Structures are given as C-alpha cells and as structure tokens.
Amino acid sequence: MTNLGFNEIIALILVVGATVFPIWLGLRLRRTKPGELWVGCLLCLVFGPIGQVYVEGWLPWFLIVLGVCIGVQQVLPSEPAMLIMVVSSPLVMFFRLRR
Image (cartoon, rainbow, N blue to C red; front, side, top):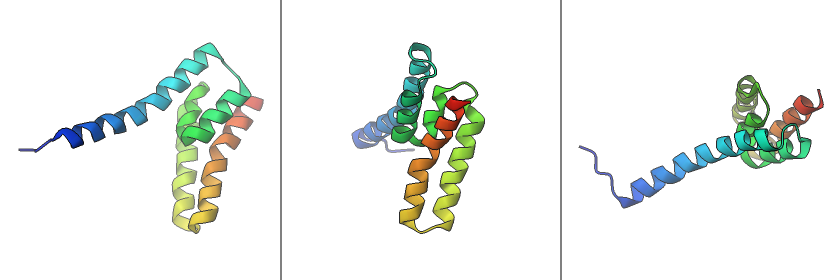
C-alpha cells in the first residue's frame, strides 16, 4: 500500500501542471496569434522544446530538439551544454516560422 501524503499530492499537482501548462499555452496561442515569430521564439526560450507546440507539425521537431538537448548534456561540459540547450529550441522555431 502506498502512503500518499499532502506533500506528495501537492508535488504531483505541480509536476502535472508544469507539464500541461506549456502545452495548453502553446495550443491556445496557436489559435489566437498564429505564426507570430516573437511568440514562438519566446515560448521556446521559456519552455524549451515543448514550445514547438506553437506551430503545426510540432512532434518531430520536439523530438529532435529534445534529442539535441539530451545529447549535448551527455557530451559537453555543463556551461556550453546549457548555452546550446537554451539557444537550440528558439533557433529551430525561428527557422520553422521563416519558411
């Protein structure tokens, strides 16, 4: 039997909210402000690869950027890896929206 207390329930709600909120925001902004370059880049800067939800056909791009972020963490030291992870998703969004 599991022992779920108040702290675990709050942590679970926060984790689910932190996962669902960027997806909801990206889908909502896709309908209200479609194709805005600054909105897409800002979403990707704040939420990382999940910001790719803003543009149709987001799943392959999400997986590519996520793979880059995970691979860079494995290969490079922490400071260059962090720089590449922060910059990679907005750059991909920039090139997707410029097409």
